[in-house]
Image (cartoon, rainbow, N blue to C red; front, top):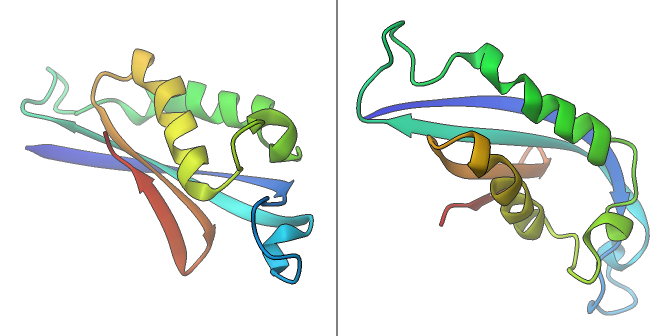
Length: 118
């Protein structure tokens, strides 16, 4: 099995509902998110790739157009804009164009991440 990944970044604001009022994430705040798409294949294509990284430019375009410098609550309602829900949303957006996609990882901080892998 061959596996590759590529990272993309965006900045956005959000607040999480259902938390105690004193919880810092219940207030509007922002993150510099890192999204990692993970692809895998049993065989390499004729060029020796799982997928040419240049073919992932649509991922950056999607993130820039739909998520960067936005309030994620506006985009994801009625879901909570947790890293877990963002990862699943992005997986579902990218999978039709990336059959090799097996997971999407979303990091809100350098020390935390959530992975959606069906």
